[in-house]
Length: 337
Image (cartoon, rainbow, N blue to C red; front, side):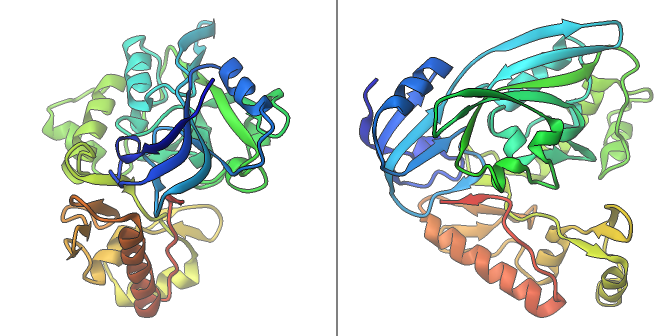
């Protein structure tokens, strides 16, 4: 396999940032990945998935491997559950819709999340009360240092809130090639109590919702709040929702009486970063072509020709203002390159 040189990455990242990779190679199989890794090369190596959770702040030196491994498959099945797999290059939302078409439940709350299946465990993607960890069974990966394949279960992945082993000890060491999910085939458990799901289902005149109804409600909510990356460059939620202790929550409610909070463990609460950002006056703010989306303060956008460094500078201003006004640190959910 040969690398392409100085390849534009504008269409490979959902922010639509214009940047180039010194050497770029699409990867369609584990064997292609292992072939590239066997080359003696000490230059920097990066792995790109769907490009929906990365902010590129300049041209990338070294090698960039773009993982496009396809495949959807039912692995095993019994009366109540099924194990299905997705190649790392599978589009996440299309995979979710495929599972729903088979009446496999568990992923419906994760509808319309941009990106690829292989990147989903790294971020432990989540939405509307469900995280990937809730339906994860195991994954297959390749060690980028040795080229060896390995299998990792849920415990080994060390999932946390928008976090995993692959963002900490395993950062830069492994490339996920296939992900396996344990889904329901009967008695689907629906998660309806997060955000505006129940209200949206009622507006849709759905009295007894099923998994497809729930997916449609989630799609409607996300579409009403989040810009389409094909029209306005963005990576979805830019910041993580902070977790705070009860005493801190009580203090903040003196400043923001309408602050929403969700349980996050003993004496822990998750609060919406968007509410803090909006209260600081950033919602709808624009600085050149970099902006804070007018319908959702958690989303930073590229209105056309913003540089990644400009979006990062705006993110830093926002985070600093939230800290100075409310004493809460908000950190990026997006990976910054």
